[in-house]
Amino acid sequence: MTGFDTGSLTGHAPQALLIAAVLAGMWLLLVVIRYVRADRGTQVSMRQAVRVRWGWVRLARMAGLTVTDKTPGLLAQLTAQKDGPAPAPRVLTPRIKVKPDRFGVIVRARALPQVGLEEYQKAARFLADAWRCTRVSVLPDGPGKVVIRGVRSDPLTTPTEHRPTGRLPEDVARWELGVDEFAAPVCVSLANVPGVTVAGTPGAGKTSGINKFVCDLAPSAAVQFVGFDGKVSRAEEGDYADLVKRMFAFCGDDLDEANALFKRLVALRRRRSSVIRDVLGVKNMWHVGPSRLWPLTVVLIDEAHTFFREYKGSDVETKRLAALTAENARLVEDLVKKGRSVGILTILISQKTTGDAIPTFIRDVCPVGLSFAQKTVEAAVAALGDDIRNWPDASPVTLQDPAYVGVAVMAMQGRPGFTRIRTPYVSDADAARIAEATSHLTADPALCLDALLDTTSNTNPGDDGQDGPAVPLAKP
Image: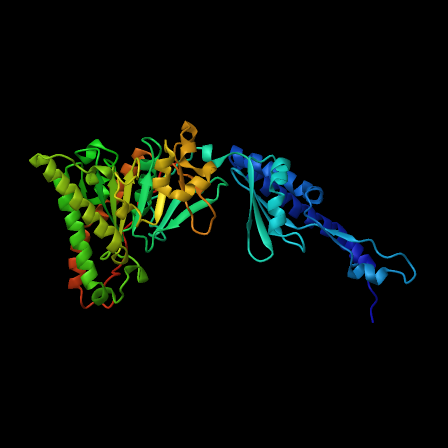
């Protein structure tokens, strides 16, 4: 049997050290490259992440995030002498992983006995001070884990810009609104949603938010748009001048024209309701999803109060206008209450969503509500519900400072209270580029339904191919 050759091991030591040095140098080079290529905010966060890692053990002890284990470990038990002193208790510190980004750091930590989610949440203010963060949040991250989000700069007061890529969206029912006050992405699912209300004072960011929504979904032929703008007579005079090419119909403040278009949409809703089971094989379109021949039809009603205004007077013209707006309200009520299952989504936009602007029998059926800056508590309550009174710090009344242009408030499922969201700015030039490049995808859903009914030989007529080519990427 050959003995262990210590000389051979010693001879390979220089090579092993050289390999270790090369690997360490490559790792260090990679870190330097990442640091140099990062933007200024991320560079500051990367330095912050280093301080968080190096100071974690000491900070965790001071913040009460450690636990004392009086049971000796296996090695201590093996080496302990029979008549010797008992091994000293061990102080256990949770392990962490730190990831920097533009706004701060994301720390993922493990829980320990007596150190769980509640203890981390209690220590949040101490962690914020130690890490020099504006605010710190602690949320569960799976069994026995927590995620700690520390933001150094306030995402709500940091304007962001969105440049639509023109790529086909992965999910046409996904509305990516922006980021919350901890820079976490905020998304809303519009599947099975009958309506959305968007409120806010002029210039607060409503139009830019809608621009992003349209630009993100425009590359899909499975989505079609129709626009109403109550503050202009023609599309080129208003906010939708750049997007009208991607709309199969548009009307301004003419009540007769709007009434005719609402009737046209209700007729589409009735036709879809009458044939959906025979054509799609389901009672709810969302069970199979929208397609080119059965697209999600998005009805955008901006300055909605124009179309629902209550006219009071005894002259013939006033009575005629009052009858038109009353009928408009009934028609939109039909779309909101009955359009969900057949793929019609109505988005109502107004400065205030009080009952005199949007009838309550329409507004209260819309499960998703956003509000940008508001001047009065009453307007905030109309937009978000009475519960906003219990969350004064999140009220849109506090968003009147110019720094908060583009910030909205909404109630999110699964989160207590209300969430403040920084929505990104979309330029008119980018909106025009997307609309122009996707205009060939525009189609009247009524004609699509006619084509779908003609394709009786297709086993899956609702899905007949590609949604259309993507738009050229935006120039950096």
